Amino acid sequence: MNKPTSRSVPHMARQLTREDLAIGSRRDAYLRTELADIAWSEARLQASLEETLARGPKGDIWVFAYGSLIWHPLFPVAEKRVARIYGLHRSFCLWSYIGRGTRQQPGLVLGLDLGGACRGLALRMEESGAREELTLLWRREMLTGAYVPTWVNARTPDGPVDALAFLVNRKGRNYAGQILDAEAARIIGAAAGLNGPCRDYLVRTAEGLAAHGFRDARLERLVRLCDGGG
Image 1 (tube, rainbow, N blue to C red):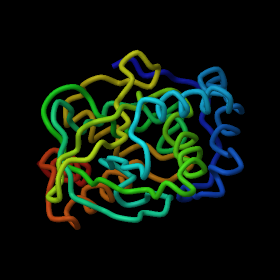
Image 2 (tube, rainbow, N blue to C red):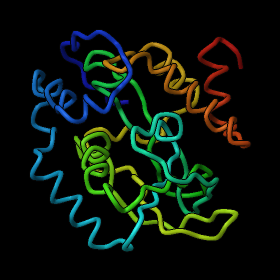
Image 3 (tube, rainbow, N blue to C red):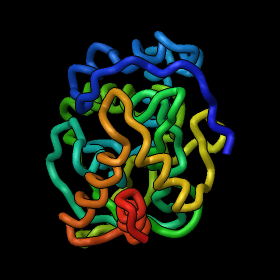
């Protein structure tokens, strides 16, 4: 693996909040490091948001949650449905240099990568207030261009919905590619960042999936490996 190394980011770990997104504290954290050049400006974030909305449906917005959005969405959820998408799978394929790791010891977080299928949640955001909420969501997910916002067909028990999903940007500097489970568990178990230990991110996602009646065998295996099991 080609992991960059440099000075770590001093931090006091705590969970990400809406206030963090409102005041741009995560961008500030990037600007204090040599990663400043990959932090998108507010203008670039807004341009990406507008372009994505122009391609999407009108009215309420559905967001496909497959990682931390399941257990920590940070926006008002008007409706929640179990959902499945095809052609994409959940993967620990993104380096985290700030939120769940540092430059010296990056963590790994989830992205949707090509192939397979993925079960998650479709979260409905009401049209009124959606633009403000999406602005915060863009500051959370798109700050480094690690994802490609894409409209996907999410199949739910109440019928399909067009949902916004954040696919991994394979050309981005955060892209880690495919990592074997044993190595991924070692990285996840060792890393921590502004928003806490990387292992907590893994465990909370696995628990969030289980709480909605389905499991991800790879996530559960990674938890066991982090805890010294097989």
